[in-house]
Every structure is written in structure tokens, then in C-alpha cells.
Amino acid sequence: MKHNFRFSGTGGQGLITAGIILAEAAILDGKEAIQSQSYGPEARGGSSKAEAIISDDKIYFGRVTCPDVLLAMSQEAANKYTKDCGKDSIVITDSLFVKEVPGTYKERIDLPITHTAIGACGKSLFANIVALGAVVALTHCVSDEALEKAVLNRVPKGTEEANKKALQAGKELITKR
Image (cartoon, rainbow, N blue to C red; front, top):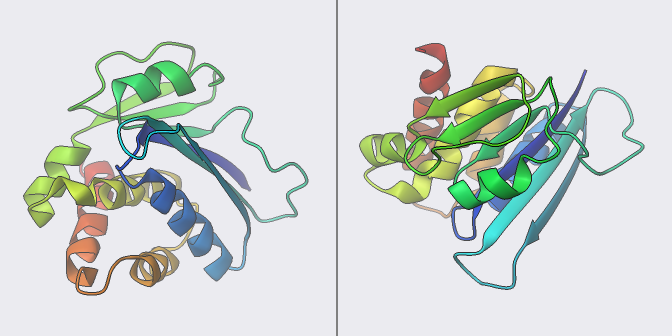
């Protein structure tokens, strides 16, 4: 099984961290993984994207040309990064920020990602972990154990419990829909 992911949004939303965490979780599960990232020259506020490829087999091409799952956390990201989605792509959006999604894709899933982060953890800065929980609950691309371990390896000390709550809240967005 092979999964191609693209996480897109605004710089500062933690999507590059989310891509790194997902790739690390795949490696913890014994899978092959490649992660890449790109962002504009702005430190915060410009568009950014992280891509991850996870496979049970060797990965010979390290670029996502058509994402299986595209996460769009801003309208600008939806406009910019959905162009190469295909008829089998699933687009997940943060319903607070994304209203329209151009292009061709199989399914669009609008989730209250930022609202959920605020509700579960008290701050919107946990939205990337909520989104990661939702993506993994939808795709089952890595185990829950590996994902939690990768999250805890990467988040700042003292935020572990809040990040666990965010991860669980993201999973529940999918399991309860």
C-alpha cells in the first residue's frame, strides 16, 4: 500500500511539523517514508506545504504528483495546491477557513479542525495535530501507537497531554461523522 499526502495552509500553522510527524510514524511502523516541504519567503502568513509518501515497498520517486489526501487549512492553500488532485483524491478542509475547493477530486471532507483544537486544548495552535489525527483515522496509514509516539517525540516539553487530546479529537472528527 502506498499513500501520497499533501498538507497545505499558511506558514505558522504547523503543517510542516505535521508532515514530519507523519513520516516519522511511518518509519516507527517499519514502513518506507519520504517527507518534503516548501514555503514562501514569509516567516508566517505565506502559503506552505508539506508532503509525505508512505509505502510498504521501496519509494523510487520522492515527489507527490497527485495527492491521495490533500489537507487544506486555508483558502489560499486550497486554491494553490489542489490543481494536481485527481479523480481519486480526497480533500480535507478546515471549515473555518476554506469555503471553496477548485479542481477535480473524489471526495471533499469539511472538518471543524481549528474549532476542535480550541475546544479540546484551548488554543488553535493544536490544529495541526487535530488534522493529523483526522488524516490517520481516515487512511489508517500508520498505527495509532506509532503516531502518538511520533507526536510526543516532536512537540515541546510540557505540551504532551494537550497534544494527546488534540490527536484524539482529530480521530473523533472522522469516527463520529
